[in-house]
Length: 599
Image 1 (cartoon, rainbow, N blue to C red):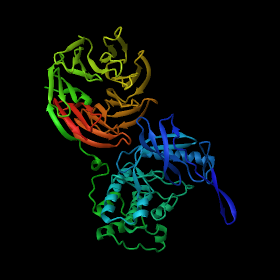
Image 2 (spheres, one colour):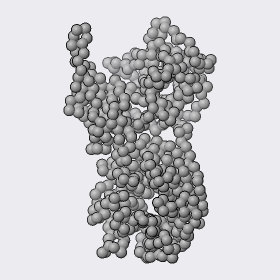
Image 3 (cartoon, rainbow, N blue to C red):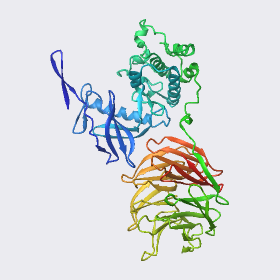
Image 4 (cartoon, helix red, strand yellow):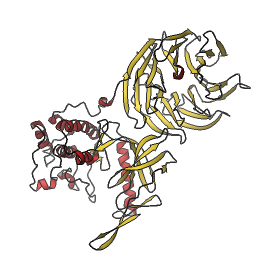
């Protein structure tokens, strides 16, 4: 599509950048586009939803002005030739590779990238708020205290960019964002370049008048962090004054800076040094600029300002030795634990009033599951025994298996009533009096460590020491798919609708996989040791993990950013379980304690 305009009596055709329609599915339905929420000279940004769980994301489409769309595909137009458009698409993907380096609250987070429609797409965290440029247009200059907080957050993020060997090269209010939570974020790394890289002789300098330093207008000039210092100082000036300083070329010809009306002597001295036209006379680093402003620096990699603790609600000693497994029946207000001491314990939820405590197995209890109606509990031990318990009659216990390989996981089928037992020898057994015969099939080459059943009951996920997750058809025991984990699999957990699977790994990471495409869509890091267990929050928008480093971590499911952290047990935190109604979860660890946390 295009629109026609008249210019000095001459009719011209100016290409119209037609966005993709809301509802468009991309990458085999992994993403579904919404409305356009941002538009720049080189791209359109869409609000979008991503499987699993319809996670909110932003998708940035490379679509430079002068080009247009034909049957979804981007077509080269003035000033681009088809070859130049292809090269520019690759440069756009380079922006994605730069963003992949960072996981800092002050830098927009990349979640994925792909090519389609003759162009490229970056999948980024969805930010709610406004750019500083939009804020200046609607509200004018900012108070000094807010400006200093903004430059502190942005400066610490920029230090990390420079320490990684990159320059941003286009800092200005339109490329800086404030979220609804008050987090300042650097956007648009499309002009980022490696530190000290010299532009080619035919390269046209990319500049933003009013913010770019004088050396950035020169083709053969090697830029240093001082170039970003100049742009950041211009942004501070604009935020305080309500309009930008004169362009560096105008200043070189005699234009003067108008004194700031909203400032102090400390800020004026710092800006005077940071706005020197000659780069060797200018403040050389962002860290020194922050120090000159008198802003406390926590360090470029510091993210603790945005991390909250889990709050302890209740605790009780459950076992003599480690609490190895937990299962929660929040609908019937009961929680059950198994320990290294071989005991099975039950408590009210969330008050943790004792209900049952008895010897269950001849060794550690490794697996527990509660029936969908809450009437039965099944337990499995290291000795290979499996027992079925009544949750209403204390003395009612039925042996399902007396001995065998250690039981690593147990689950009740959500609709059929039988029990699936995962054994350390790599086999799964289906147990029930309603089955005409006991079924068993091999699930793993090597020890089996984790298992979960899809909420609708058709799929079984298994994982173990070989570092792969297998998906099985429970109706016939046939393999239907495999997921490649980065290390041995410690735990598996489907989300509520079964569209996603959490995979806890022995390499200190956690992966969220989309079941339909069998692709990993989030990879979460932060723990200093193996991730033993993971679960979703009640609203499915947070992922909570437990580790051998004795800590609980809470991540946003949409952006993958760390939100919460708490040291919770002495010794490893081996088991967690989340209430699916309230914002509560329970943890059990090496100290034998059972703790309830709110978030």
